[in-house]
Image 1 (cartoon, rainbow, N blue to C red):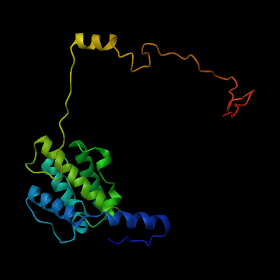
Image 2 (cartoon, helix red, strand yellow):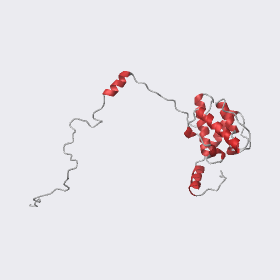
Image 3 (cartoon, rainbow, N blue to C red):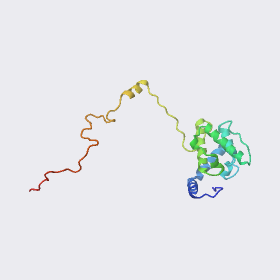
Image 4 (cartoon, one colour):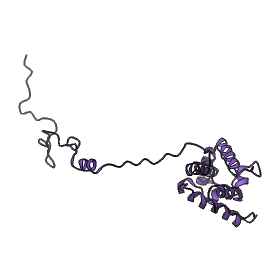
Length: 197
């Protein structure tokens, strides 16, 4: 994973940290899931190079979200980045949250491969939940569980509250507490105790 420009300082530290988190196993699983979903193999062994032009990603999103799979095969960087942007738009439409997606430069300029892999994993889970694929990567998305209470239960909850929880227990008061007054530290003895045996 080499960056086209030499990095220094904080940028270099960030890039090294991102590279240390990268998992080849997760990448391989993402690759296999994409290949089985679109029904074709990657054009090269390099995961990044295969996805960089956005064509495979557009084929993938075309299977999952009809209408978003249009792409142009081109060597022009602008057209390749447009393909990636189309994939990201389709992935959002499929339900992938913004924070799970990557930015176009993360893939095109090889800035953050892990985020690209994570976005594909997230897309697989959302596509499975939508019923467009039969397999997914990682943990299954949880179903929303909404609870509705009857008006009687809601009314009871408004009027009944635990007084002990709020400090209103029987007999509790603030006697003996002083706010703003002077406090004597250490006792003062007018007549010190005598040691008479």
